[in-house]
Image 1 (cartoon, one colour):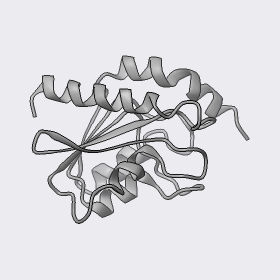
Image 2 (cartoon, rainbow, N blue to C red):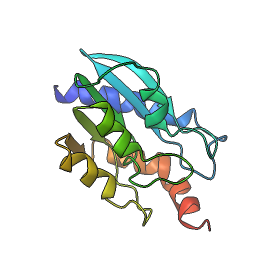
Image 3 (tube, rainbow, N blue to C red):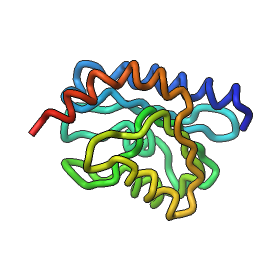
Length: 149
């Protein structure tokens, strides 16, 4: 995938994340788009607490294996099972072959663990695409997330 296309898809994921506000709080407004054959085939954004994260919402819109799908996510997929299952593990189970992540999740329960799960399963992962923009969008909400009990 060329760099211009990748940036365009991450911009779409960032726009999707903005749709999560304010219902997603105190979780950050994450966006995800899934791309197949150069076209966006599914979108998702963080739902209210206890409901699907951006990745799970997008993945639920597609059936079957996803070995021909590239995911663009504004924040590192979660590695842990909290109120919802691990998004990183779900992406692996569904067979996503490549993931672009705008920025790592500073939550100490994650903090690179989601990326490790993906890479250990053989998923190609690129971190940092439009990371500065993601930090502007997500930064204020990540601080809220870090301070919650």
